[in-house]
Length: 82
Image 1: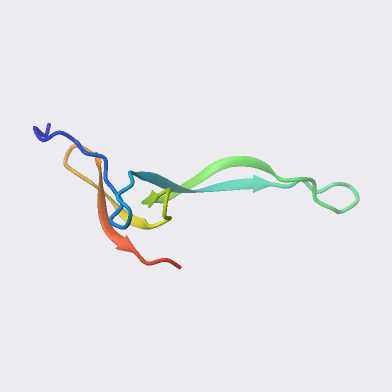
Image 2: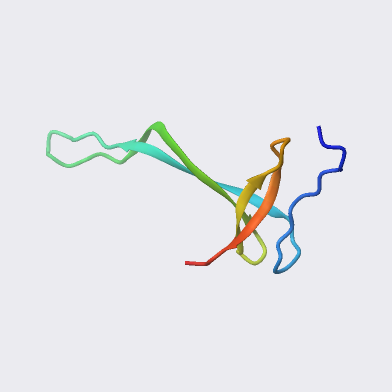
């Protein structure tokens, strides 16, 4: 356990608190009707957890998500916008 109190990571650009964005892959199924057309998709199952980043909800800047020895989120390097 760390003795230093935890501080929520802040955006370097605008000093707002960051949120975690998790990327997941889900499988969606579409049943084929007798007419040969597919029904509307429905979620099948959770397939894969890919990654997580920290994002500023105010300005949209993203950062690499890091964790300390207690598993708490820390702001990593700034990610380039696509």
